[in-house]
Image 1 (cartoon, one colour):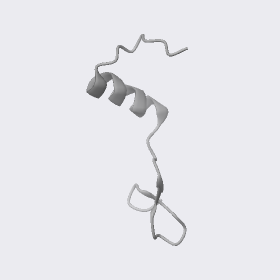
Image 2 (cartoon, rainbow, N blue to C red):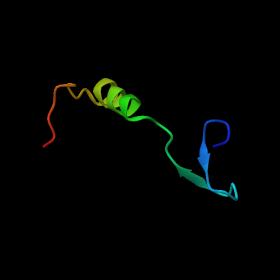
Image 3 (cartoon, helix red, strand yellow):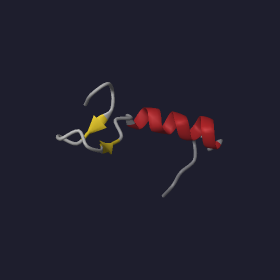
Length: 41
């Protein structure tokens, strides 16, 4: 992690997301208008 960004050890590329699951769900509900009660099973 560097400046809240996940990077590879050699700092040449991004390594993925550092978002937490609760943040991802909140974004899905807010940005994609998916009701939080939706079941995906």
